Length: 140
Image 1 (cartoon, one colour):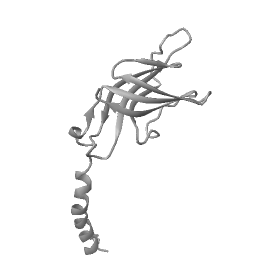
Image 2 (cartoon, rainbow, N blue to C red; image 1 turned 90 degrees about the vertical axis):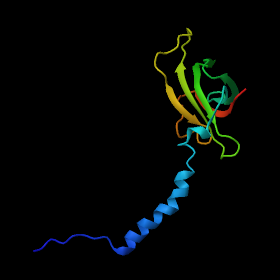
Image 3 (spheres, rainbow, N blue to C red; image 1 turned 135 degrees about the vertical axis):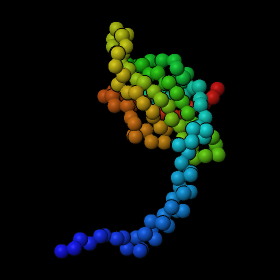
Image 4 (cartoon, helix red, strand yellow; image 1 turned 180 degrees about the vertical axis):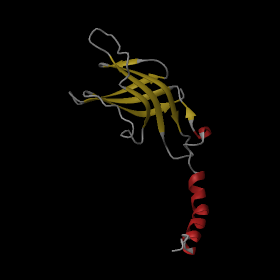
C-alpha cells in the first residue's frame, strides 16, 4: 500500500494567507509591547479594604517608600500609566509584607508583582483581612 501525503485544501491555504493583513493592525496596536507608550509616575494612589470592618481607605504612597496599613507593609517599586491619547491603564509594581504585633516585618513577601487598575483580579493580593487595589499613578 502506497503512502499518501496529506495536503491542505486550497481554501485553508487562502484563509491562512488572508489572516496576515487582518492581524497586522491588531498586533501593531499592542501598546503593552512598546515601552515608550508608558509614562513613569512618582506617586501612587491605592485603595485598601479592611474585610473585617468593611472600611475602605485611600492611601497615597511615594514610589520606593514603604508604608504601613494595618498589619501590611506596602512598598511600591514602580508606577506606570498611559498618556491621555491611548486607552487608559495604570499599573504598579508592588511588594507587600506582613507586620506582626511587635512591628517586625516578615522576610517573605505575601505579594510581589504588577497590579493593574483596570483588572485587579488578574494579579491580586490574597490576604484574609485586607484587599489592596491600584487607583491612580501621578508624576507629581
